Image 1: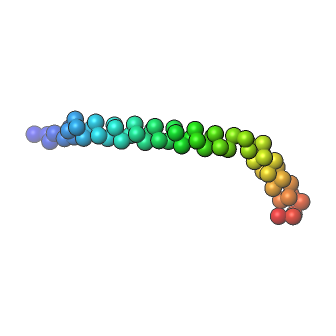
Image 2: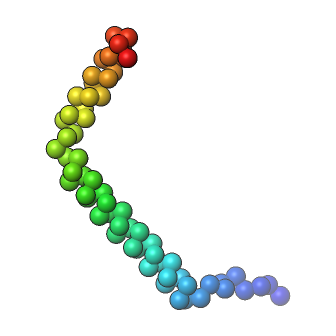
Length: 61
């Protein structure tokens, strides 16, 4: 006779789903906070990347 493959209780499955949904919400909130604080500096980050690449090509880095 084949053993039962579905030995996971419904309560355990609901706990796993609850934890995954909480992680999903926390990741979404963290992404929004990081985007809020870093959005004004995106132009500066782009300029810094271009500057570092130019310094590398000119052997100053």
